[in-house]
Image (cartoon, rainbow, N blue to C red; front, side):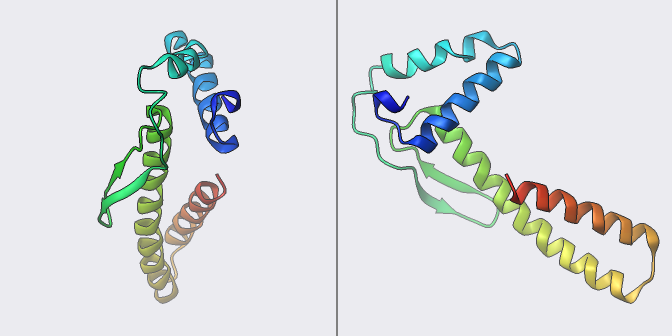
Length: 124
């Protein structure tokens, strides 16, 4: 993918996508899909970075910039995760305030589990 003009991160995202699809049994969406990218009639058209056209606290509208749909879905998914994490952080802060006023092992355990989940998403 680097050889046909993709940046290293874009090439990694595309390769990860098709490898994951192939390993999950979706052969049509596996490695042969990379050939479809270069063969697409609009591939020669100018590409630009995706950009946000409109956003709210829970949604984002992107201009895909003539990028591959695999890249578009990757960045759109990341945007949704980030928005959800922001909501989860606010909820977690509210739970944390509650935890300090009420001693409850169940709440404490749930808060700790939420913290672990949030940290695992932030590290990806």
